[in-house]
Length: 249
Ligand code: SF4
Image (tube, rainbow, N blue to C red; front, side, top):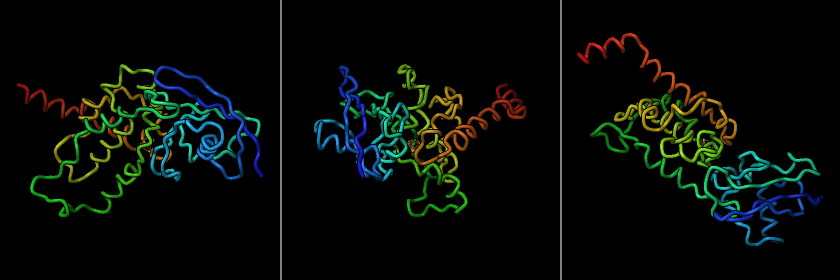
């Protein structure tokens, strides 16, 4: 049995916009994306919203629902009370293209900047061999669906456009950690690189990225903190310090 619910949706483009109110039918078992589709079908056919799989695996329908970064397809309407107004806004960290669609190019630029997997010379694809235990260590990070909710929520860039050039963000820290754990990735010291070139030092491990990850990847605990610790260990290790002193002479 359906009911009429209150929705407030941001409409606009790069020149500005505002929140518009709608009353819309909601049925049992529906998610926020269902309701957006109903709005498109019945009241506002030009409402722009990016989506694809509707199964929480393509990472397309990222949006802010009552101020929280979430996937529209994984947010059940039953989590709101009947009289609650559900407010839908575009991701705040990326420039708006139109309505709920943002330009996420920042993330693709950071992906391009991250040095690719570099196996030892002379080992052809197909000849890579590694232990199952090594496969399992980084499996968690390969669950990433690139929804960019972590990138959107990270306070280092959320209200600080000026930090974007130096800061790669949580999604790419887990990529660095994944490659750091890969026994065949030989070329780059991923921890040093993350610290020196990806802006890992900006992260003060508030765990907001972990909280919004729909894949429940422990971004902070399992990727960022271990990499930070090892960088620090190396920096303050008395033997390493002594070695550096001697070698500098
Ligand atoms: Fe999305 Fe999680 Fe991947 Fe970040 S780490 S892009 S929140 S799936």
